[in-house]
Length: 360
Image (tube, rainbow, N blue to C red):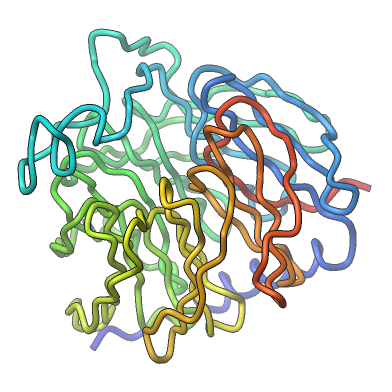
C-alpha cells in the first residue's frame, strides 16, 4: 500500500489552509477563461460584477492560481477550436458510430505554435505578464503546493510538460496516452493524474522522477479527475458513457461505477472541503450532479446553464460556479438549497473557472 509522504502532506495542507483561509477572511474574485475571446474575466464574488477583462492570447482554457493567489496560470493554445465529438463523428457521432475510436479534437494545420504556452496574469495589477513555454497545445494544468512546478497537458502531442515557474522553462516532456486533458496532483503531492480522452486512460506520473508509474484504463472519454481530501479515492467522469468511476488510489482498481441520468455528459469535477460530496458538470446535459462520496450514489441533479464545463466551489463552501460556454455566462448555485440562484455574464466561451483572494 502506498503511504503518503508526511512532509508533502503537511506542505500541501498548510498551503491549502493559507489560501482558503485568506479567501474566507476577505472578498474573493471568480476568474474564468473565455476560450473564444482570448481573455480572462475577473468577477467580484460579492457583487457579482465584472472587475476586469484581461486579454491573454489565443484559446485560454484551464486556469489555476499560484498558492498565494497573486498569479493566475492559464493554459493557452494556438490550435483552432473544433466542434464537440457528436459534430465530428467518433464514439458518439454519426460518422464514427458507437465504439469507433475518436481522433484528437484539433487540426494541426491550423495551429499557431507561437501562441502555445501558459499565460501568467498578475491578479493585483489585472494584467497579462508573460507567456511561459509549455509544449504543444496546452489544455489544462496543475500547480504544485509550493508553486515551483506546473504540470501541463499537451492535448495534440499526447504528452505532459513539467514547467519550472521561476526559470520559466520546460524541465521535462512526458509521453502519456492520446489526447490528454485533465491534470490533478494528489493531496500528498507525490503523483500527478492525467486523463486521456481518446484512450480512455489515466497516466499517473511521479512528481519525484517525472515518469509515468502507472496507466489505468477507465474508458468513456475521461475529462477530469478529483480526489477525496485524504487521497484514498479518485473520481473520474466518463463523458461519452454518462458515468463516474471511483478508483481506489492504493490498488488502482475501479471499485465502483455510477451511471448518471440519461443525457448526462460528465466533464468537470470538484469535491467539497469536507469530502462528503462530489459535484460533476454534465456539459450538454445542462446539469450538475451531486454525488454522495460515501455511498457513491446520486444525491441530486441541479439545473445549470448551457453546457456547464469548468466549476469551482467558493471558499466558504456556500456557492458553486460553473462556466457555461455557449451562453457566455457563469451559473451561481446555492449549495444549501442545491439550486441555481443567478447567472453572471462573462466573456465569449467561458471554459475554466477558479477563485483568488480579492487584493486589498
